[in-house]
Length: 130
Image (cartoon, rainbow, N blue to C red; front, top):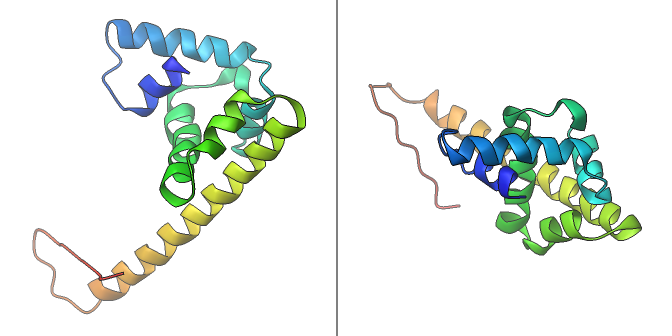
């Protein structure tokens, strides 16, 4: 978990951070945690060939989605429970992440709609009360 957190925090992978990330990937590759295996599977990842990019852009967003849209407990349970409870929590985490992607896509459609109506300069800032 420390390796995953280090990678997801996008810190430079130098020195001890590199060591934590390296051994974190090794542990993920050997992990028997049911929820982690389910989360990796939902993201289409092969745990034996996991990369820092896989962790940062597949596992990280799922963990963050839980805390931003619902409750971080979903992520905690997916990584700490065993058996059916872990798999159920991982499925819930995936549902929350799909909702995050839908919300993001909706926001981007609104942004692109507003951009079409403007003369763009070098910096663009777009806001919305929602």
